[in-house]
Amino acid sequence: MACPSGGGPPMNTDISGIGVRVSFYLQTLFLSCLSLRSESLDEITGALYTLLATNTAMAVTALILGFLPTAEISFHDALVVLYLLFLSWVAVCFSMTACVRFSSSESSKYNKITAKITMLHFFSIIQSYTLFAFPLAVLITAETFGSNAKCNPNAVVVLFRPFSALKSGRIVIFVLTGLVVVVYTTILVWDYLPPVKPAIRWVHKQLRKRVPVIEPESSMEFPEVAPEDPPQDEPETVPSRAQHRVPDVPQFSPRPKSPEPVSNIRLIAQQPTSCHVQGYYEVGIPWELIIKIFIVVVVWSLTVMNIELLILWNHFAPSNSRSWQFGQVLPMFLIIVPLVSLFHAFRGPPPRPFKLPV
Picture 1 (cartoon, rainbow, N blue to C red):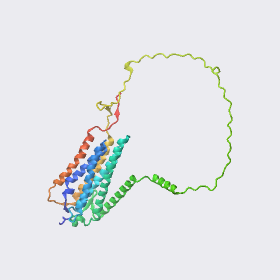
Picture 2 (cartoon, rainbow, N blue to C red):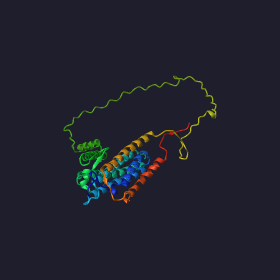
Picture 3 (cartoon, rainbow, N blue to C red):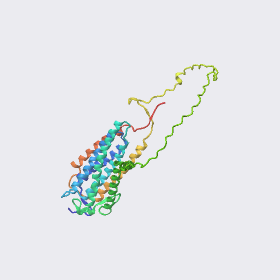
Picture 4 (tube, helix red, strand yellow):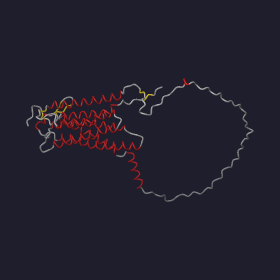
């Protein structure tokens, strides 16, 4: 298929269409806000598992469709998928770090939480390396990748402005992907390998076991010296009671205090122990939560803007297929789980310090 002047082939709407993009946008936004606000690990894990499955399925599908004998996606589609996966991977890493705060002093509850976080970490590792394989595979074969390799020189990547995907963009993405892989692997190894000091102690212990114990050839004998009897002190004379007579002190009985009137007694309200008793909270605004959500929304908006600019400046050719087909409608159902969890998290009042009435 001939390429338009300076443009790309028609978009594969099943993998980079409007429905797929909106699903990724909303899932990442809902999950990030949920990680900041929710006080329940189960609410976060439900949305997190959904996004982990979506990311892994998207990366595997794009790899299969791109490396078929007759490829079904273009290099331009792969760039859109790459941007979407980057946004989702950052949201997953942000949510995984937010799950660390869920800990308890109770051993049974702590073990359950640790098991859940360990399982999440395991699936996130699989997802991460699957996502790392996708950009490396696409960039290595960038000149011949996809269904319309003749259009690949026209592809651009966007970071607030377009630049060539096969020249400077290819180098930048290669370097960034390599750095991310190295840093992620280093952190992973550092978390799972035993600490350095205990390992060194173990090596020293093993070396001490292998070194033979050398006994001295001759030992010097010293004559035994009988211990001397300790000198016996003369018994101390205890003064008699008559020598230390305490003069009689008159005892005074305290006067009985008159009971205070009931009006002077200050009644102290106790903190309610039941959820049916309404307490008094300090009037205030959770500025810390608002600032964090504001930063998340700003970063998310800038990333979404760059993805849409990528589609705009790549000049995809018009497609004969309709925009909202089965492949576009189905991903929209994936936002139900994070949306419901987000609604439950923000339905109650934000956590504030309890104030007792006086």
